[in-house]
Image (cartoon, rainbow, N blue to C red):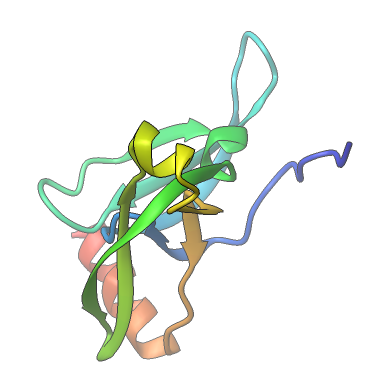
Length: 116
């Protein structure tokens, strides 16, 4: 079994359902010493959130849903597969979050938005 990394690259990530998140840091759970990902959702109230790295890097059973424009490029969004879709093998296994590459200028704008 592979050991999960103790950290991930900072930057922009897309959730499998479509929303974007800016990963801004890592911390450690004081009780378990497990690594924690700290991020801002790029929607709603932009409140800082966190979750265990293991969950952040986990995979989900998903079904293609619709297309969404992200920085001018079209990406598919997904939804969680139902038990019936899993039974019929009408799903795919994919990462819960995936890294999004964007220009330094766009990254700077997003980072400035979060600081304000």
